[in-house]
Structure formats: structure tokens, C-alpha cells
Image (tube, rainbow, N blue to C red):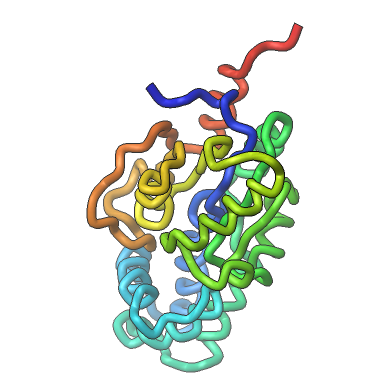
Length: 240
């Protein structure tokens, strides 16, 4: 049986894909560029090409790497391979939206747990994301802070070190994320209890997120942050 929500002091969160709709952001920006060029594109095809380009050996830190990614995928989508459009995709990050349920769910969860952001995005991008999410985090870790990206265990180890500095341990953490590849599999390997937010439950495939070598059955599973927050509230001890 998975440990229940009251057993944890910290909820650690993936941000991009779990709380922020990066797929919607990418598709919207590429559609705008396509419209300017007088063509239309298939959004899911674009995400597949993005995924393939994003995880190449010469990838840079996210989201700066979106400029390189755009130049790689534009010809395959029939888009103009011009630097100004590559910069437009990168800069669109500032306007990417949070999922409709993210901010309210985080506000509710922050009443009972310490929320920690763990994102492969750089600090400048997280600054934009935090504002959209209502600045709910007790602590934040970015690729700039850790010098690496999930699923590298070293990213998680820095969070464990921070938690240990507060007199707690990884046993006090429930890790919440949508990416099987970046988060759910590695969190299991590191001995964390995890919660999978299956954002693409109504869609086929992995979209813009790399496909894992093997599926990891999560300890907890929800298809939205709203459902997760509701379950936490429902199952925590009632105050009298």
C-alpha cells in the first residue's frame, strides 16, 4: 500500500508539463508563425519533431534551447528557418499558460504541505511560471541551480540535501509530476513515493515529452492537479 498524503511534509513538483502547459505554448507559437507564413501545421506532428530535436546530444538548457530546436524542425514543418522566428519561440515561454487547475490546486496544497519546485527550466523561465502559479513554492530548484537536468539523480540529490538541512529526509517527500521519463521512473529508483499527474490521459502518445524505456506504475495517479488536491484535502485528518 502506498503511503498516504498526511505522511509527507514536502510535495516536490515538476513544473513544465505538470503545472505549465508547455505543449499548448509550443503549438500556439508555431501556429502563429505558420499563419504569418500563410500555411497551417499539425500540432501533434510538431510536438513529435520537437521531442526528437530537444533530446539531441547538442541540446542546450531549456528553454534557451528552443531557438536551436526551432531551426531544426522548421524545415520539416514547412516553416521559415529564420532566427527571428527561433527567438519568437523562445520568448513565447513568458506567455505560456498554467493549466486551468494548477494555481488553485497549489494554493490548497500549500495549506498543508511545503511545496518545492524542481524544474529543468532555467531561472528566468521559472520566474514567469511562478507568477502564473501564484508564487506558491517554499523552495525552488532550476537547471541553473543544480547544473543538471532530471532524470539525472544529481538533481534530486541537491533537493535531498536541502531537505536534510531542515531536519527532514527524502521519506518526507511526495514527488508529483507528469513525465514518466524525467520524474516518475527516477523517483522510484531513488526510493521516493511518487504521484503521476497524467495530463495527456485523453490523448495518444507522449506528445512533447520523451518516451520512457519502460512505464513505471506510480504510487498515486491522477489525471489533473484538481483531482490530486481534492484527494489530499479529503484524506487528510479532519480538524475538530
